[in-house]
Amino acid sequence: MPSSAGLRTNGSPNGAAADGRSDGAEKAPSVGFIHPDVVRAIRAVLVELGADLDGLIAEAGLDPRLSDASSKPVPFTAIGRLIALAADRSRCPYLGLLVGQRTTLASFGLLGVLLRNCASVGDALRALEAHACVRDRGAVIGLGVHADIAVLSYAPHEPEVEGAVLHLERALATVTNILRGLCGPHWAPLEVLLPRSAPRDTEPYTGFFKGPVRFDQETAALVLPAALLEQPIAGADPALRQRVEDHICHLEADQTSTLTDKLREYLQTAVTRHRCKAERVARLRLVNRRTMSRRLRAEGKSFRQLANEAQFRVAKQLLADTIMSLAQISDCLDFSEPAAFTHAFRRWSGMTPSAWRQANQPETTRH
Image (cartoon, rainbow, N blue to C red):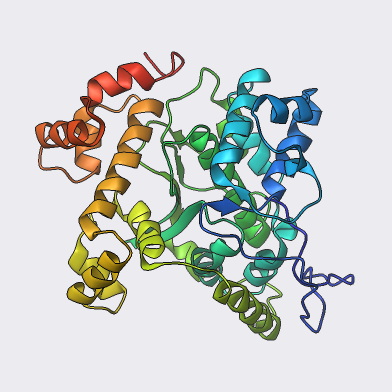
């Protein structure tokens, strides 16, 4: 996701003008859209692999202007179709990893300037969690701390769509490069978690992440030592950070989001953390449950409907892209037992989870 920066560079070592003025190049995407630089990164990788991106765009039935210099956000689903087709045609199952490797902190645009000027790594990751939506509204980044471990997760709104699993590895590679920009080029996570089955060749993953990669996991995440969050960022400029964050908040204020959109974003990260409870969400949003229910009804939705949608989407992705057992999937989605999961999945899809997996899991995933 390299970017044209939202602040003029003018040779500044922090990638922004000293006065922090905006050149208007950045525009926050709508829900379900991400920055077009992802398409340009795909193009660059495929050129290196000797593939024809224009032909692939045509074959995928997408707008040929996707790969031009436009700053118009692109649908997450459209890029998913493209990257899945490109991985198949180039016979490169780790194409998402290669695309993510092309992003550095310096190329991350306005958001990169903000992260580089935070006081500590923890502040930077919390800023990424809070403001990633200015570049990517196809997914949600979440930061959780558990004793001496921190977990940075990436949860797409539509995890079951074509190519979503390649988006996941692209995003984790991107975040890894961001952390290397903050902590040094040799930084490595304690573990990398991917909700996909292991490819035949895992060396590209371990070679890039420089640490253990665990496949067939319930979520996409980097596992970090919690102590890393306290590490100061050398050369950070607090005044520049404030100006950039103010500008980002201005961009975010222009985004149009309903309560339904915001709850979907939360539920997508919460669905595999056993926190899909209306009372908890109401407290987090500083609104009582009755008010939340009334506002959702006005939008034609209910909390239970949104929670079920989130569980169904994650269930489909895990059934298709991993070899996790039904019991494991049932547990991570917080069902009381596998039978309850099977009953719910049949209600959502008209099929049992096993039948749906048989019909939708690619041959390369089946063992």
